[in-house]
Amino acid sequence: MLEVPDIPGAPDVVAWFGYWPSFHDAEVLSITLDRSSPSRIVVDTRTRTNEVDAGGYYVLDKHAIVTFVVEDVLLDREGITNTRIDGFNHQNVLSSLTVTKTLEGYDLILDGIYGVSASISARCLRVELSPDKPEPRIRSSLDK
Image (cartoon, rainbow, N blue to C red; front, side, top):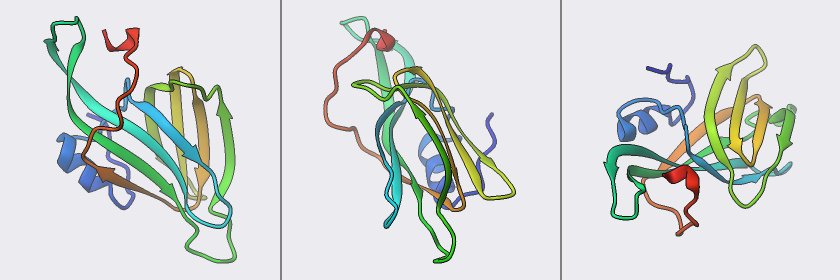
């Protein structure tokens, strides 16, 4: 069982999934960096059941859009202190997503399988949950 990060909104994620997810096979839909308003990392997250549908794809459950929000609560300090983003493309599948508390704030690490890999260091981080499916996407071989 993964440790639940100490950030606002994390209990809502745990309530929906029943645990803090690893975000394995989750898909990064967008990364929006903004110097004058909150920056957002939007991730299509779901659980995979052991069931397979008629097309040979795993049946997915507990769909949610999980958004990590970086906003500056202190006017004299930066919200984002460091970034590295590589490989963002038409499909951005994660191996894992981790949030680690640091002396300066938080590190958000997106460990990619296909597409984006990123690390974002920020002073203030929160998470929002929207239990819903995103717009239809192209299925890939990763869903099998």
